Amino acid sequence: MKNYLRLLRLVTGYKPYALLNILCNVLSVIFSLFSLTMVAPFLNVLFSQGQTYTEMPWAFSVKVLLNNFNYHLSQYVAEHGKLEALSVISGLVVVMFLLKNLFRYLGMYFMAPIRTGVVRDLRNELYGKVLVLPLSYFSNERKGDIMARMTNDVQEIEWSIMQSLEVIFREPLTVILFLTTMVLMSPQLSLFVFVLLPIAGILIGQIGKSLRRTSGKSQEQMGNLLSNIEETLGGLRIIRAFTAEEFSFEKFRENNNRFRKLQKRLYRKRDLSSPLSEFLGAVVLVIVMYFGGRLVLSADATLDPSVFIAFIAIFSQLIPPAKAFTEAYSNVQRGLASAERINKILDAEVTIRNRPGAVAIESFKDRIAYRDVSFAYHQGGTGWVLKHISLEVPRGKTIALVGQSGSGKTTLVDLLPRFYELEQGSITIDGQDIRSLTLESLRGLMGIVNQESILFNDTVFNNIAFGMPDATLEDVTRAATIAHAHEFIAHLPEGYQTNIGDRGGKLSGGQRQRIAIARAILKNPPILILDEATSALDTESERLVQDAITRLMENRTVLVIAHRLSTIQHADEILVMQQGEIIERGRHADLLARGGVYKKLYDLQVFA
Image (tube, rainbow, N blue to C red):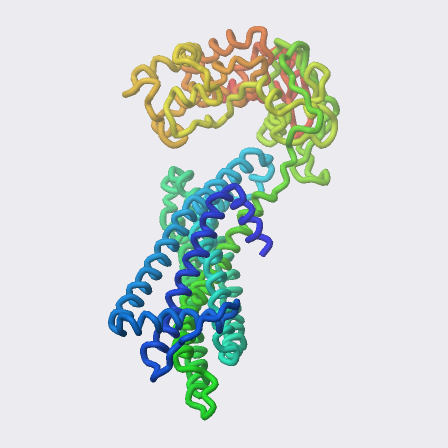
């Protein structure tokens, strides 16, 4: 129920539509009730033998109201005859049903903006949360499962919970008004209804609980399935290179079969709720008809036949909303399983955020300083990736990080824009701890080119101008020219407006790298982070881009990570890292002269 109420809080933003929906549903139920309650006085006057209503007292009670209606109907029958009265009553019933269904449609009409709006808001909230969650969160979660929660689970909520909102708002009102009327008509018969209906509700509720458990397992398995698909699409080259198509298909087939079995169980349980509720409703109806018939046929005749017929008519119309409510309950149980999975994302802790009193840094003037920095990806200090790192990066200098994979180079630079939260030590920019700065202003000082070019399924222009909505074509062209990307972009079918496909799949590796470099150049940041910036380029492109970056790095601060030591020979300082520690530092020539680890790495590349 907690998860359901949490979803309903999103409805508060649509109060006008909700109020109109409630009003229309109330009117729909009232007109439905009027159309059915007219049966009793109509039959009583038309088919009674000699009974005539000659008085019209004034008092507020069901008996008086019924008497007064019968009085007017008796007068009309006496003046115009039974056939004309039959025509008028029939027409009145038709009008009542017309108004009932008109207001029912209007209720659904006003519910549509609520349903679609709540689902839209939920998607926006999910996507916004994903954008601010720390990178460490995604290291512990499967990408496919997160995608399943943002797509399938949200869709399940729309199909189940949101689709059931109309029923949940309308049908309880229908049931309450109909039951109240039935109690006023015959308390004895109503007693059977009050005893038997809860028993039926309990049986159906047990199915709903089981449905919720199965639905949760099904959604989890869908996450596994999407993870499998995502891994396959990202690794098609490796799958084909190792002729692992059969192995990959078998893995997918097993996941798909598990999902199918869970769905089969889910459908069987869901499909059971509707016929079971209808059967139980029919059983209750037969019991009511049996005992009601005995009341009519008994010697003292405690129940009038016309009232009994009207009672049965109302009760028969009570079964569909009760059945719809039980179906809605089953749907809600299925949707709540998805809501629980979604809330795991929404409730995830955002560990990296602007601290209270954080200030914006406008510019970079002096230096970056790492002071006794230690870091572990797992909280609690186990498995240190960085150990007591201290270094200074003066403004305008280039610092290169080298070392074997896993030595901590990327982690060291990832701490600077606060992709991960620092645990021990401090990092300062111009003497200000980066944790005291706003994330927006801190990251605004930096341009980043990753080892793997991160491009989006969009145009060349939008990829270069990413995050810079005010950039002009002239600005983008200038940046692309510096990155030696303009020439190949100009030969694309639509130039800068050419769509480059998913992850830039329509471009070569070197072209993707140059667009990523152009994006960093366009941002024109005072601090550059180049992670293997030229590793994806051919020899000629590497030379041209290296020249452009060298010009760009003038009077700028650069942290560069590279395995190709030939590209960092002119760095102001080279840091050699091993197992999270700086074991050597100095300029290129000095490190070669020492004959240490750097010299060994350099010789391995030169003589390879």
